[in-house]
Length: 308
Image 1 (tube, rainbow, N blue to C red):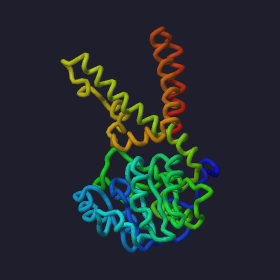
Image 2 (image 1 turned 90 degrees about the horizontal axis):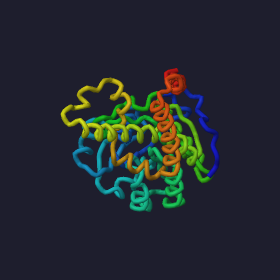
Image 3 (image 1 turned 45 degrees about the vertical axis):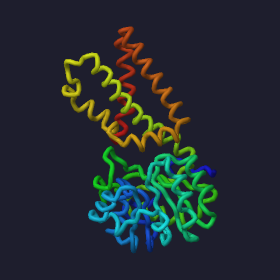
Image 4 (image 1 turned 180 degrees about the vertical axis):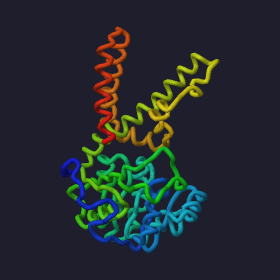
């Protein structure tokens, strides 16, 4: 894979596409929070003549039609993608191979397939291997998720001001890349390009690891609760616990797959995190107040940079 500069961004302001983009039919596989929000934007801004949804649950697809996220839906993905010039794969990342093998051969020559997954490296390689050579794949990751899932949680402004990382390789068609860039710029995103493998290392640190910490903290509190059954610990919680663990309300299915597909990076980063916990534990055990304060101040200074 080619190495793309970390953080190379578009000079175009969010919400202004560098070039006009329009699709005759966009098919969204998985009309949830991200797929549904993208569909709303495609329809509102006239970026597609038709938006077709494909999913597992009819009730969710009916809701997507009612909310204006899609024009119509089908349950057979092969039928849904047959006339599409753009297919957006917005299902859990572990389902990618199954989906692509199922309907990839039904795609017309020149069709663009893109995704919205939080893991890229091996999945981009997999997509390029599975799809026919006549189909153009462009990996994309809009960093705009939230703990709520489903199309009902979607928003037409979800991507405004958010980063979207595109992960081209040597095989990526330049025009397809430009079309996907223009699409996400039209959505209001700040578009960056990054090598797929580097993407997984970076996002493992700033997104996947925090989710590990949040899930683990809630489960730790559950164990502490078992030692004090007479009290409901969560009833005494304040903003600190809510802020720290908000993302623990995210989809277990989605994050299971992300953890497993980025396991090498994530395990290494968890080990670094464990080391910092052990060090803080040691300082607390030894009663070293000045060292504790120094450790906390170091973290505080870094955290304050997120507010800039």
